[in-house]
Length: 211
Image (cartoon, rainbow, N blue to C red; front, side, top):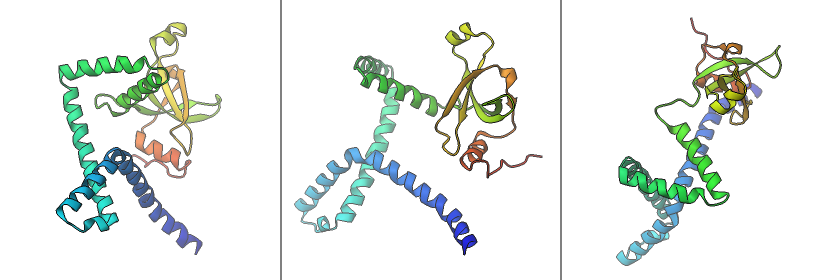
C-alpha cells in the first residue's frame, strides 16, 4: 500500500503542480480584463436576446479566454512598438518619470532589470554549473556562474573576477551571491537544468552520467 501510494503520488504530483502553475498564470494575465469583458458579454447577450447569460460558468470561461487572447496580442503589439524609435523614446521618458516616484520607482526599476535579465535572448542568466568551497573549505556546494564581478567591487578586491549564485535546497529561488576567484571554482559537466533538478530533490535525483 505504501509503495503504491508513493508511486501514484510521483505520477500525479508533476501534473498537479503543472496545472497549478498554468492556472495561476492564466488568472494573472486575464484578471485585468476579465470583469470588463464579462460585463460586455452579458450586455451583448441581453441585447441579442440570448439565454447564455444564465450559464455563469460558460460566460466566465469565455471571458477568460477572450481576456487571455487580448492580453497576448497586447504584449505582441507592445513588443513590436518597443522596437520602434519613437515608442522607445516615449518609454524612456515614462521610465524616468516612474523612477522619480518614491518606493514605486525602486520596485519598478528592480522588476524591470530582473525581467530583462531573465528573458533576454542574447544572454543566459546562469552560464554554467560549478562546485565551490562553501560554507567551509572542506565542503562543496553547487552553484551557478552568473557573470563578471562589478568593476567597482573589483577595484576594491582585484583577486575576485566571477559572480556565483549558490541556491538553497529544496527552494532554489533563494540563496547566496558570492564574489570569488575563478581558480577556486571547479567546473562540472552538468547542465543547469539537471543541477536544478538535483537541488529541488535535495540530492535524490542525480544528474545523468555522461560517457
